[in-house]
Image (cartoon, rainbow, N blue to C red; front, side):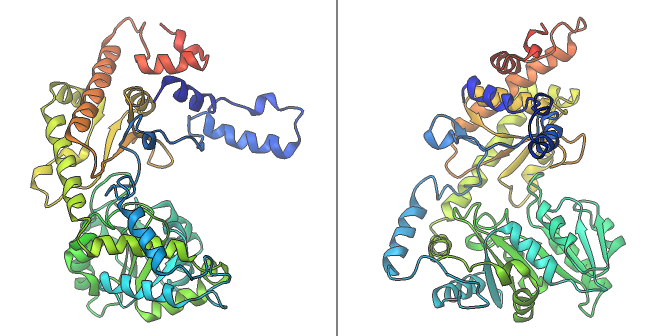
Length: 455
């Protein structure tokens, strides 16, 4: 990625409200609100994708199995369209009216069977699915116990829930979980910003010990494990054989599955509650045929074993990253100095599997500077700052893919080491004349920022 493209992104972070004194109050108020994000370089922008053009290496997208990048999903999708060429493209109505159709119900049954569930309900997205679940399932008098690092959509869903209590517990802590056990438990199989795995079996055993009558139930968000973990990519619950112990599962299709949408898995009671109490399901047009066909195409690939090699490749690539970065002489010194840290490096060789999400922890503001350096070196990655993560836990989020090569991984490690070495030099400069790394100076200079002239 060129420095000029980074500069264009940084240009979007400049404050706008001070120059809008004569603008209509509606737009001025909106820009004042947006300026609160710009001050922290946190304004989200729609921008061009550069890794799809082959200019940069993808360590950012959710196409983890690379079934989108390689074209195999497109081929399967085209064949599926050919088999059902006469079906209407759109559902034309809510499923509660006449927007239901046989093909959709068939695909839902197939997916539920694949994951060992009684039934399933396809919705527009994983975000909507979490909102639907929490709006419809917990009743007055229920309590929701949730891992403190669950998705933003879970928090939005809980805001609409009738549950009397919402109680967080310390991330992935079985002891903390035991201390707050009450009713409905919300966890994720793989956490999106930390890349670690839920100790689900331990949590289930604790819940059964305290609630032997089954009055405590689990909701597991499998957004980041679908296609990645378990037999044929069926997810963490299936990998652990806990299908009968989990009341509700959410699988999304916009990540490793390469399409869009999500499915909520549970029993018939759960499905009926969703179709009666979840307003987005009741009042939204049903899923369109091409979307459902794309979802089915992904599952055809998994069932046929055509994604197994991709699953194994992800494991190899991530383990190679851990191996190479652990051997880098810069790494240990940078970690001791607090410039960077990879929590997932600890004991990685003892785990049964690694995950495709690897965060590089660093200091606030440093996350942007590391991303500048990586993008100039043609490696796509994303900075993550508050409020996406707790304050003081800045990081760069790396996502590995089946078609990443070992040489690309080695280049990535080399680029991280270059930046870490530069930052250690800057931090060790007692004169404080040099405050910015070279990539940041380059980007700030192109956007005309005074920061580039600090040296």
